[in-house]
Length: 102
Image (tube, rainbow, N blue to C red):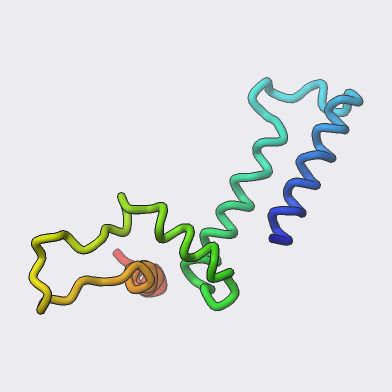
């Protein structure tokens, strides 16, 4: 939450300075929106590598809203076979990164 508030404050400060004419010679596509991707990247990094520091409510939100990446158990899948939970998939992703695959 503090990261979000900090980044939003930076964005508002940027917009204020832009309104006062501080950034006249910048490209047309460069703006305050470019502050948000690094912040969201930091959140994703914390989600994958430091989940103990990541809020449980946000973890469940991310896992629930990413069915294309972390798929639910198929209906016809045999019950005696294991199917990974969302947290196990994310932990495996972190382990692959730590092992520097490929």
